[in-house]
Amino acid sequence: MKAIATALGVSEVWLAFGEIVGEGGESPPLPIDPILLTVDEMYQADALAVKAGISGLDLMEAAGAGIMQAIIARWPSSPVLVLCGPGNNGGDGFVVARLLREAGWDIRLALLGNVEKLTGDAAVNAARWEGPVLEFKPGLVGKGENACGLVVDAVFGAGLSRPITGMVKTVLEEVAASGLPVIAVDVPSGIDGDTGACLGFALGAELTVTFFRRKPGHLLLPGRQHCGQVVVVDIGTPEAVLDQIRPQAHQNCPSLWGGLFPRRSVMDHKYVRGHVVVLGGDEMTGAARLAARGALRAGAGLVTIVCPESAVPIYALGEPGVLNARLGEGEGQGEGQREGLTRLLADERKNLYVLGPGNGVTAVTKARVMEVLETGRPCVLDADALTVFADDVDGLAEAISGPCVITPHEGEFARLFGPIGEGPKGERAGKLGRVRAAAARLGCVVLLKGADTVIADADGRGVINTNAPPILATAGAGDVLAGFIGGLMAQSMSPFAAACAGVWLHGECANEFGPGLIAEDLPEQLPAVLRRLFSSTSDQRLAVSVAP
Image (cartoon, rainbow, N blue to C red; front, side):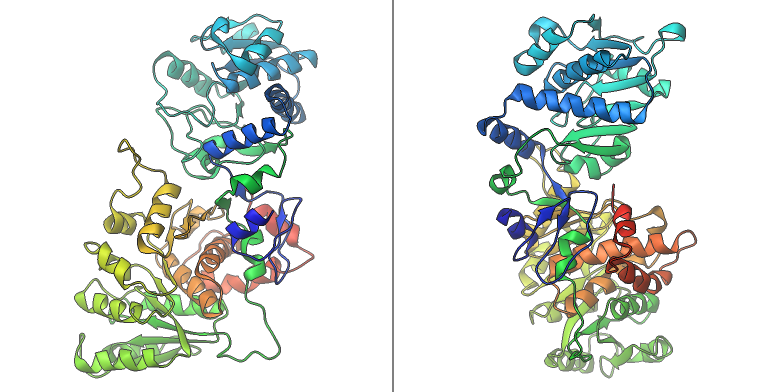
């Protein structure tokens, strides 16, 4: 699994029971595998499996058997409507129908298109189906004695690229309106397997059964909301194919970065643990204080808020554990303030800068950010430090000369990058594609915040985070996140690993607190989350919270 080790940025990994452990320490075992395969990569995996001697028919039979077993394990026997499409997804549906009927279930099967036009393995499995094939049309759900109890959606798979319209849409809308449990094959019909986008219309499934590995569309919104519970079935694809595919996308979880997390030593002192400098403004002072508190709780040895002289009394009344320093005499970006920032930058013990929270969208903020970036010091850029470059992304790209993480929300991202990552025909790229393109454009780590936060590095690695609860939509939460990431980077965690760890811990802190959360609560939950993260007695409880 050397390819996976390279993708994760660790020296070695061991993959067993869904656990990936980085050199330097153990991470909690997880009931999921973090590796995600794009639609094209899954096609490649199937082709490599066939090349290794596993027939396409065997793969389809195993897929259908896995779906059948998942259904039997969750529902009592009842009439099932199996909706089959004209491709391999429909072939899987024919296998499911045959195996459920052999198990004594009442099955009705409808096919979109003609049996005579099916090809390949789908045609073979259609021939093995001994029951009637109904016309794909409205009214299939039935009523009264003809009503079904479950629906298997095997119409379209993850590779669908066109919107669902017309009669097909009408049939699927009837299924949705019926309220019947839907079991989706691979992905719910209408969901793009790579982007999670809804193509015209998409069924909402109670259970989605996919094969070998999950896809980004299972985790990205709105796809994640349509998939319900996602079960991955082993269909016999050799694990070795991953070494040839070299997947670059993963679900965020501790097994990706736990081995890179800062470790304590009896020889540590505060400067070993890093010194974070937070640039504070003179109006929205709470933002910088939240970032500073986040950096402290994340383990930074020292945190200093540096601010205009006029704001020093405000910050001095804040956290007793946070140092305060003034930029210098005078207001704005006068000579005294420039000298103050230059003096701070001359102290190499101050090894991480958090810029943007509460700084103000001004030329002064932009000048300060540029001065810090040009030194090559590690930085986290958030909020105003990004907005000041809304019309100058080239200037930002040129200024970044050292380790850097930027943490925009959707609005800041759009102002900075515009329609980045568009496809060859002008189609809008999915979130993962857009963030990867942005990271390549700037040459740094980009973290696009949201309910499905995506982190990407300039080398193409991408991670999707899934543990953020709705209560995180509160003022100041992003400032705390910037502090978490900065605190981890100050302790020599790589920008990509720190961003992944920071956003996951951020979500866990919100889950730990629960309803009523405000931003100030987040740093105070971090000790409990970290204790559970590295506790051998409660690893499984932690693992459950990162499942999609």
